[in-house]
Image (tube, rainbow, N blue to C red; front, top):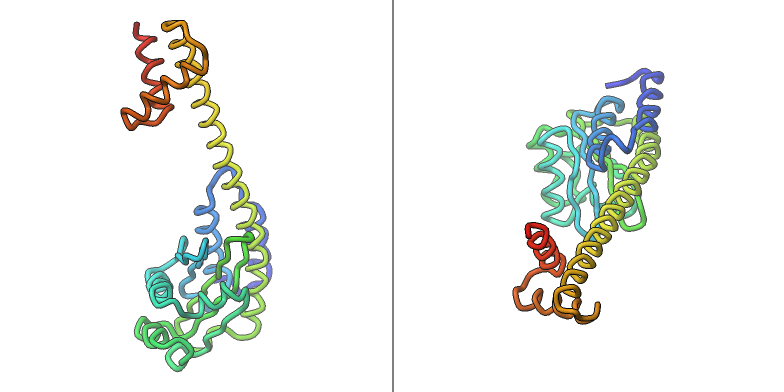
Length: 234
């Protein structure tokens, strides 16, 4: 764990140096969780909660205890991580074994060897919220200085994750557009083959392809690709 301000500054700089073309969103999430564990004093284990379309999950974690405590919250629909993510706020649990805010969670945390916890809201994009969850081994692991440091860390991490999400979304859209262009090209090829064989119009050729697709319960692109391949084989 990094207690030296220079090392903490280096961690923030590392967040800004993540090359989006070399990793995906999950890779960035893993980097953020690992950096948080190394940077924040008292962090025994770290996890990241994401809430997308109303569904919460943990895409990155540095230990099984953190994952187990996160998943209990999702199953019970209550807990510090969910509260921090929903309200975009900081939730501090200074003594996990004595905290009665979420019935059942404090007992599980204490029995898992967790004495304290800090969850900081992590806004990413409009429809995706989250929280950085820091689990401490002993009660009182996170004082005001650590809380302030965690909040600063989250501001840096939020920028990196928002950029990664945008990059991931753009790459997915580009892939879908490429696939759509390829599908259109093969359908046009198939239409040309049918027009040549049957001396019919483009509309009639497309109607034939559509009818075969419906009759065989296959995608139009697959029907067209099979016709093109068969024609190329002679």
